[in-house]
Image 1 (tube, rainbow, N blue to C red):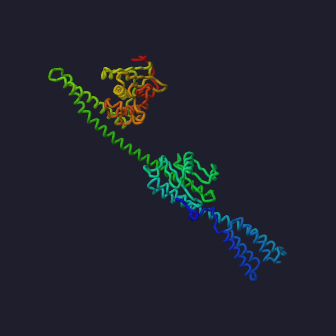
Image 2: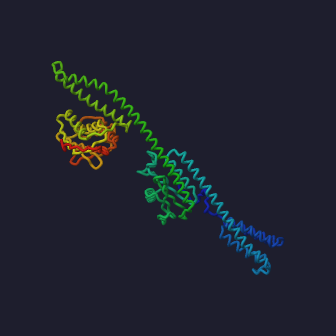
Image 3: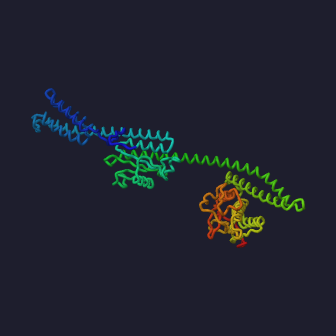
Length: 527
């Protein structure tokens, strides 16, 4: 996409003069003087003066203002010498002839100035019309572009068509490029001829969002232009423009290039918004479908699971000979696995409900000591050999929350800690206030979690299974996702921290609301 020096651009801007203007001016004056010399015997002096003024007006169309003024003054002097008596000298004997010459000079200058201004206005009007047409054509190309890459190539073609431009290249942020583009390199998309040095300049213009080059006020000593592709809130890329040997683009050309770049920036703004809206719509649809399926599955699981659990409990309660010891073991396995499936179904159903109705939960004033105590008592009944260490600070504020959900969250965290922690070390539970937040820490002394897995830890159906977890109890990855959802509907946060000295530490942080009167009651510091 490079130009040659003989390229004839289709857009002729106002700053360009006619290439052979001197030829046109010389032809006008040559024809005028030839006509005056031939027709001199037949014409009056005033008529000859009018012909001379007409030549001044015609030459102003090609020579420009200052050269026309000089040519007009020289023509009046030669007219005096050639046609005003006494001929052959610059002396004027008759007063009205002197007045005629003076009037000729003033009128010639006025006509030259008016014609030059008219010519300049005409060229500027033509230039503005051509620039507007160029922007319109580029806007049509952008609307028809099937990809950002195609839009970028359209910008290169639009800039290359301008007068004085020899070469142009474009760098775009990969965020704005189509995925799997063959031209994408690292985090950049580069179109057009561009070496490493120019790539660095393009990257600087992109990072700073400012223009570099002659006439821009920044790095004017370099012969190239680096112009950012600006959107409403960010720079999407940058353009390299190399002029011909003059090394300086006219201000009108530079302004037009900036308009084209901004037009591409506006297109990329719209493209990005459309992509984000489409992605959000797809996520909403996928989430709604997933929640519907999860809720249906969870509901369908609950009835057969309850039947199996009741049958297993009935078998376990039989102590007479008809139930052999092996049968009791199998019944215990059925009961344990049924309980696990019931927990999975409950978590799945609860997660679907929370994601469907994020704000519709009943809130009431609850004591954090009572909620933690209820969870610990339930855990000790479920796991008689479990070693739990509880540290609850005194005089904790009440929580404005759904106690059932918070208990379920803490139940899941402590149950995970017992499953994946060191059986010979205690699971530590701490509850304390930090400024305007109430903190619940649940820590085990197991192998911890690989930091590379941490970003996926709270996503549904994600379960970390490393070498140290191969022999540990299985799960579906729904528990932590539910815990995260419960924290979020309470405007809180649930985070995983790598505990000092090893193990996993989950921290629940909930906001403390303005307390009702008389809330502070002494509570045990540890259990």
